[in-house]
Each structure stands twice: as structure tokens, then as C-alpha cells.
Image (cartoon, rainbow, N blue to C red; front, side, top):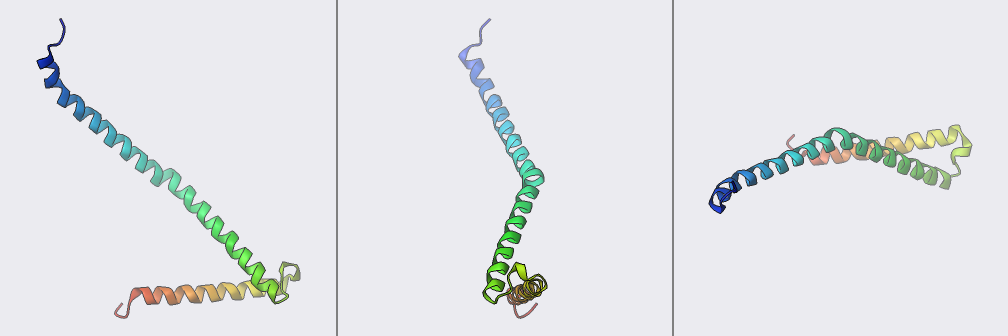
Length: 102
């Protein structure tokens, strides 16, 4: 017995609902994956890149003053001072972004 076209049309909305919910579930699964698996990996990669950029800046700035990495303790002191300057700048930005009434 074949399905009549009228019978098929009654089933079509149920099929559309099933396909729609399958799509929603797939989307939710992708978001959960991104948040739990890919997200931390992207965060680590970003932190590594920032650390490399900062080290490059330290070498360049300290090197201009004759305190490149080959100078050992001098370079370490220079890099520490640059970290302090960066932290001070971040603190100022944080204070400014909080606003005057917080």
C-alpha cells in the first residue's frame, strides 16, 4: 500500500520538526564542543602568542639600551622594569574603565 499524497502531507510537518530539532541539537553540540574543548586550546595559544610578543618587545627595548639577553642579570632587571610599566598601565586602564563612581 502506497502513501497517498494527502497522507504524506500530514507527515511532512512532523518530518520538518524532526529535522529542525536535529539541527538545533547539532548546533548546541558544536557550541558545547567549542566552549569545552576548543576554547581552552585557543586561550592557551593566545597566551603563548602574547608571551612571545612581550619577550620580543623586551629584547628590542632592553637591547636599545645595551641590555640585551646576553647581558644576563641586566637584561632580567630591564625586563622586570618593563613588566612593572605594563602592569601600571593595565592598572590605570582598569581604573579608568571602572568609572568615577565605582
